[in-house]
Length: 130
Image (cartoon, rainbow, N blue to C red; front, side, top):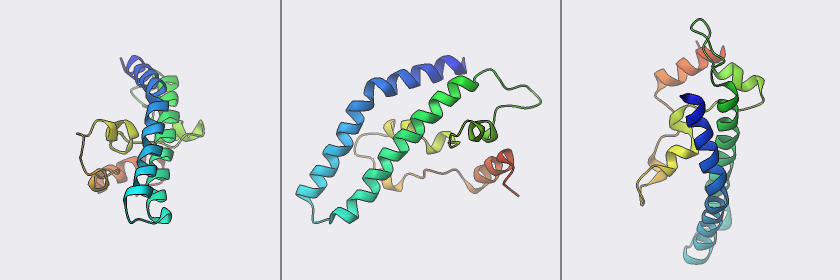
């Protein structure tokens, strides 16, 4: 059931939210103290991850609210999320996906967007694609 999955995901994110945020800030502190990177060089990816976590959390809430509202003729799509003021996030672009990567995986090389076909499909659903 998609609604149950979304609710479980939201509960897990809320439970782990402070821990994840703390880990992100600890990573920033470690980069600052133990690397030759300037703050301007590591702040963008760290703040980007914090934003991605926030966007994923808002998306999961909207996903739970929209569960079961689609029909065969009109499934729930990006436009429904946008109407709620939420950025639509395909599965491969969600923070929760990054959490599922193996420890030590190079997160920077993982694509956060789908293939070109997937991007075009999402654009068509949102009414912005070709």
